Image (cartoon, rainbow, N blue to C red):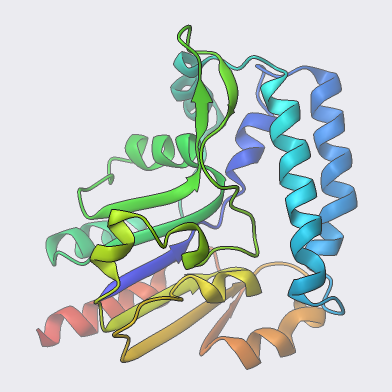
Length: 244
């Protein structure tokens, strides 16, 4: 089994709301959110229409962050002060996957450095975890100058940003996948797994419930409304690993 999981927290917000960025930058990031987020979740727009808009949003936000000259050494303290939390039940979830040697693939459109630090501070960053996200690029003085690799946003969480990576080659032979996502864009996270036989998609519907419910029900096998836990996933894992 391979478990593909979208991170549910907005890890960029941890940086946005920290003391290391200016009030002016914070306002500009908020303005971008107010412009682009309604477009991201607009049920009347196609993914093809949303795609370039998400590229615009992420690119502008990353440029603003780079202008703040963020220091790498401060990230751990920023995460600690933010008191960011994973979903309830995360200890059982992460530990069960690790104990049973099940790969956990986390695809995030946020900031990978921040997400990894959250998992690390939670004490569950096990060797079976692979995070694919937007990673900061620092100069020799440890100051943010850009972001590495291909831009990852809500609607390109698929093999287009993974196809040539060693990790993708290693996971592509997996036959069973449990996919957890909180947007319609997360449905493509398992694209390119060539030997796929079984996939169970669990969707976390957190916002615009009435507007998006029908699309989620058509796209996901299980839809959880404003559920901040991993209870369902843990139940499935318990049943699956007990049988083995």
